[in-house]
Length: 123
Image (cartoon, helix red, strand yellow):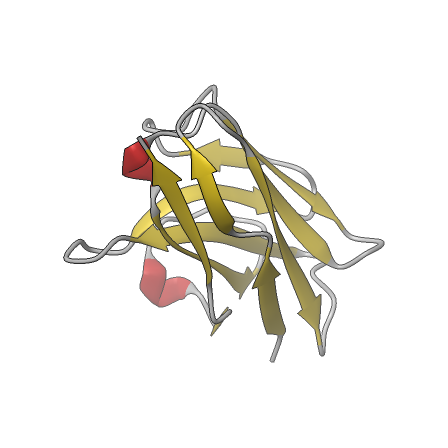
């Protein structure tokens, strides 16, 4: 089991930037895949960006070119750099982890989830 703790959320104006962190404990993120998901009020939870411990990444179309996901296995931490934030990016952001290096957006495949960090973008 991996315990995940997200941080870095906050309130920012449209066009601004935030950097989210997801620190893992209890087990290494090596040979695992981690994905950032988000959920806005009244909407389904959706995938945002994924990374595996070998550095492969994947992004939702809505964030390509604006968000960057990365993994630092030495710190057991995954980051989500968010630039050019839009009002529609406002949501609770969660990180989730699964064993193996295959990137997937299927939420049921993820074994452990963090509690989330809130991102609010004002227009």
